[in-house]
Image 1 (cartoon, rainbow, N blue to C red):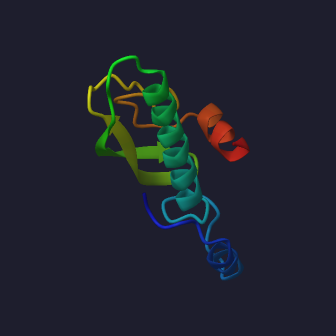
Image 2: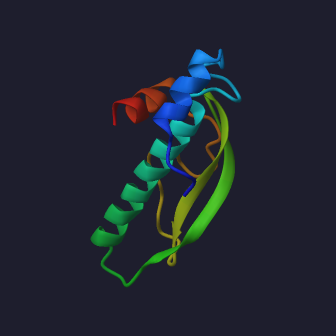
Length: 106
């Protein structure tokens, strides 16, 4: 996972005139971090519920477009290949407004 979101740095960027949303927006790294944390929690739950021996097996990357801007998302994988994320489904490259709201309310 990437570095933790730095609120002080984000506030300073806003004060200096940086946009809140968009490609280099202040919120984009926060959305990325929260999305990756939620996907990791989904995998943890999947592994806990799995009746067969299974474990984490790295991450896959894809570019995702959100209302706040595009970012590289690292989605966790499992060894058996049975993990199907719900928040950002396989082959999904755009976060819906509903997902953005879920992440921000998480």
